[in-house]
Structures are given as structure tokens and as C-alpha cells.
Length: 194
Image 1: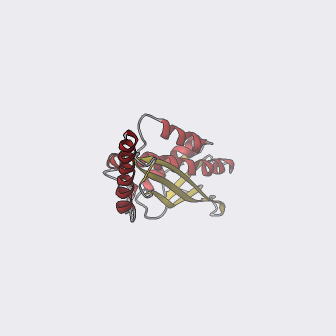
Image 2: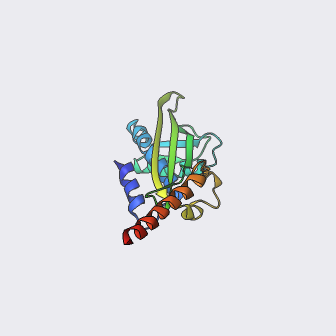
Image 3: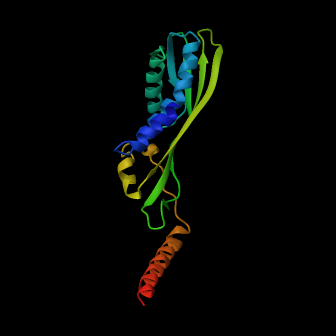
């Protein structure tokens, strides 16, 4: 329900969400069930470790800390102390673009954009026992104009930028269809006058 609500806000707002905004939303959506499960284990405080080499690890750490605190769990960053440990590994964290399309035959071009996140979580108790393992994910979609892509992508976080797909048949077929439609309309206009 939260995913749908946040997606609705992103799509109905006056400004289109940036790629980084969408990634923050999917990380939050993926972390909420993990935070609830950690809080249900009666852990009042944990040490958070982000595993792997993903360049977006900082974003997961920031959102995870916020989500855990909202669930009533205190988060420590000290790595040498004993206690509960939550290991998070980003399995997927990216934005992708689909092939450009038009809403109508003569409408403006639109590019579908998908932000996805999948996180693997392992909760370890102070004795070193694995208490919880979870794998949670979230996906949201939006559609943007090709001219907005440059504005919506991050200039500093290159990993948050998707790659535009090459349009195999669209470059040849699209002008032919538009030309055919315009020619038919001109023909119909002048033929009805005679």
C-alpha cells in the first residue's frame, strides 16, 4: 500500500522525481519489512554493516538507519563492539529505461523508467547465531519525456543513471507512419472539397 501511495505521489506531483528520488523510495519500501522483522526480534540496538561493493551502499545505509530508527531500533556504526549485527547486501539497485514510445500516433515521445531494489538481510545475535534472514525488494515505474532525462539523472552518482536503449525499428518506421498519416489527412481534406 505504501509503494502505491508513494508512486502515486511521485506521478501526480508537480515535479517529476529524479532517478535518485525513485531509488530512495524503492530502498525505503524494501527496508520497511526488514525493519519490522528486526524490531519483532526484541532487539533495541544493532550494528549495521553494508556488504558488497555497490556504489549505492551509502544510500542503503542512510535509508536503513532511518527505517530502523522509525521501527524503534537504535543503530550504531561501531564495528568492534559486541551485540546484535544486521548485515545488508544490495542484490540489485538500479534505474533502467525501456524503449521510447508515443502515447498517441502523433503524441510526444515517452520513455518508461523503472527503479528497482533488492536487499538481502541477515540478523546475527550477540552469540553469533543467525536469527533472521530476509530478501526484500521493491519496484516502481514512471514515464518521462526524453528531454527530461538529462535533468532527472544524477551528475555525481553515475550508478543511479540508466542506459537508454537503442530503438531498432523506431528510427525508420516512425517517420514513415507519421508521413503516411499526414499524407492521408491532406488527401482526405482536399478530396472532400471536390
